[in-house]
Image (cartoon, rainbow over all chains, first blue to last red; front, side, top):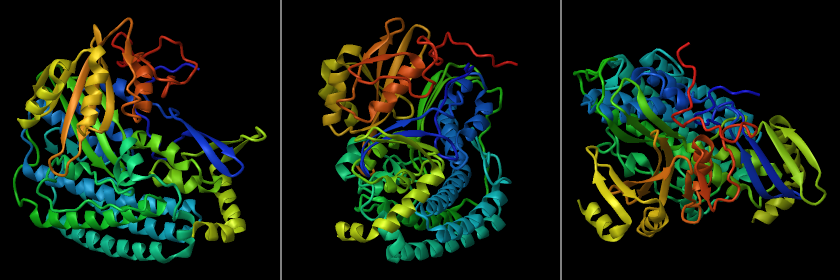
Length: 401
Length: 149
């Protein structure tokens, strides 16, 4: 096998492969080993061969769901290097897109986790509601995925009152739906049986393993880059960090649902406070040469802290772009979470950090006692889990009490 | 500037230089042999979040940058610790005992830049396939790709 450009960030977030090896004793997992790198595309090396503006559209493709976070994070870092004065209205539009992205990402994830535990009705519900956000995003940027709204120095498209009034409708709609989901999740027996007490990550461990995003906040860690190290307009936006002390998959669901309500509030605040007129981008052309400089840009993507380190050497191309995605930061925590749980709990635990849907495309199960190795694909594992729970749920329920 | 004074007093001789750039980011330059001491002092002071380890090859030496955050509500602070390692030998101490999350980051730097972290058990490639040659480290500056085609 020969690989020509083998550098770049790993994104096990969409339908992309990652391989885990779980070591089990009977039904209990004693150790796990993730093996990543199957979708390595060499993006970090490629950025060094493209101009500052070409990189905007390359880095957007790092992730399909949080494309705006990646592009915005890169643009924010590049603006520090170019020493650009970004107009206020551009920051408002950028933040609006970030929050809409959080809404549709969390709705997508909520559907996925319900699918993992075999509750497909709620999957259909959340994905239908997600369409409202997608329609609005398409109205604002022209595209449903990969909006390309950011540019170095601002944004590329202005926003008008029709979009703002629709944003208000969508925010109200999603907030009411989120309240409904919270009610359902906290009362529905099917969900509680599969998620309550599953995949525990204590607060101490979450801090020790540097867990980020909603996964950390579901363990009671009050950390949110939007709040702690505010960027764009978040230092004036009123909002609270959502945390929960359950430390299990159920709290991860609750935290994300409540975050949708908070995001809807932020969107409403943005709509009411958006500057009426004014420029939307600073003047930086394709032939503007930046000074020699380096910058650090952090953004709270839907999955957690997204990190960019950018260095310029004074030419039209960046010298180095380093990307650290939230899933890579959380992969160590997953190893910790699955230990001591049952094989049937793997789908909700791994989906709980919000990685890709087919993360567990090929799971190797090794029984330590008789060294038997068998390969499951994702569908087989989900079916196995549902069957196993049907057989065992009575004593499990007793045990968890 | 209280953070700067605090860092100067705390790190003392361990830091070769402490700078603040235009974007209010703090850069602490330390020597390779003092890296672990400096990081464990910072860890004790509350900088318990390691964002990542950046490796960068400037053609002469390899920069290793440790990006840390101290979370404290609205007054959170972030610092960046830079150290340099030789390009040919490229050895650095592992900080796994201070920051367990460095597990994947050190493997990534080893994979793409060929820095061997001493004390890291199971240091193997993270992103590239296991069967690529041993000296295949694509983020080094002498690794050229065919971009203009």
